[in-house]
Length: 560
Ligand code: N01
Image (tube, rainbow, N blue to C red; front, side, top):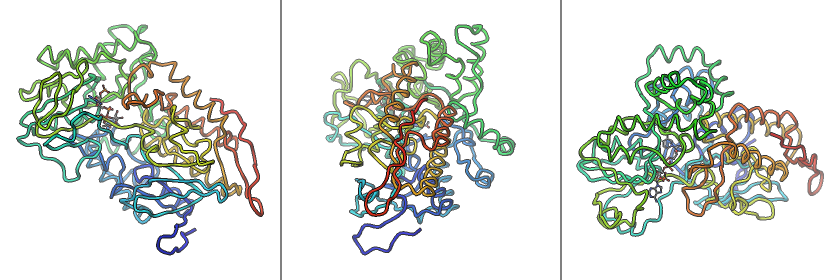
């Protein structure tokens, strides 16, 4: 099918509208356009592909998933041909990979760059979605797929006086393309999550002086990043079929070492040896060492205290070390950070740490950051203050479903979805890695591929069956939300004031948003739903004349 020719200003018609051209939007084009033959239109607010990796160009930006696995698996030639240079890929290399994929599969003609979707509305008579963009254009299609990313709506806290600051202001999630030169300048970094921890050592190498403002000390593990050898690449690629499959069935979309067992039942010497081994190997394997790290406070403390010991040995000044020791939440309940030289950076004479845990930032002055009456002068402020995660990028679009209901209103008390894929009251709309799916708790590319494959299979099914409208049933959605909440409640995960909980945004409801039951289990559940004729979705078939008939009532229980 092709878009109908339209007069200027008229609504253009397609088969599928997609919001976002990150890894999800790009694979959607490949799947829906090239395999199903659908006319797909993607709207992307950036002027290039890559999503997260298009925007997050801050110094030191690097993925915490190993490059050989942070890559698409859908095309054997692509995964064989592309050469990664390092164990953990840096942002420029990931962006180059995204651009290569866009060129290789000729994806760009399906994308409208520099175009943000501001509104999307479902027409109940026509069973179509119409989107409006910031350029005033309108386009409509039977299906709307959001591929907006989970960490795209960056946020700067509303500090008093912020607009009075005379120097430069940057947010890590909206970094200038041309880069920023901090040579000889006094820099303040506010925030010590993944973005802060990755950028601080690199900024420190340039800046004349660096002041880091830390509210919560986070757990950070050395990445031990290094160049990849030819042999590693060749051998991994030879085994890709098996390894990718294991990743798809795993907990986090990664091939990892098995756990030793429960922490308190493991011989302390064996436990310590394994903790050391994983620390020295680097990467995120530390929290997976015990089966109960995320389930029991005592077990968690074994790993947490091990990391604190490392902080004490890496940071020479005992007062600074004490501030950097993470104590405010169980390890693994906020995103574990993978760093390069983070703790050692605080041994440099021109780097200072200011704790704003007990005395918050008072205001921003024309000359710097004011805490407890003291003005820390600087020439530039880097806000590494994170994102309105998971729901922010969806809620900023006025998405209206049946009865004119706004998605952001429906989600006022927290996101509700069926499988993180569909939302009751929002027919023919699918979310890639939406809240209620493993998404941010997993290797995102594994989860993206699973969602896109599932959605594509479903669209194929709908077409073949002559179904014109599908929608998650309220019962299936309620059961799924309950299941997602129950799973989280059985762990330590909701105990941290994390962005997973919406705790970083004032006024945002505190709900544990991702599904924490594991990628493999979730995948099986989605396959089971499809196998049961898309149980939990209500289907309407086309009928001659007006309206449509209901094929099923979606009442098949969404048991988990
Ligand atoms: O954001 P964050 P991020 N005053 O929300 C602090 C992914 N990612 O951009 O912890 C003072 O984690 C806030 O303090 P606190 C990854 O999933 C991945 O770093 O709320 N401080 C915190 O220290 C990650 O988890 C990669 O007390 C304030 C920081 O700002 C996610 O993106 C790299 C404050 C925000 O940390 C988000 O990471 C980068 C205030 N008023 C990002 N408000 C990799 O792949 C907030 N803060 C490696």
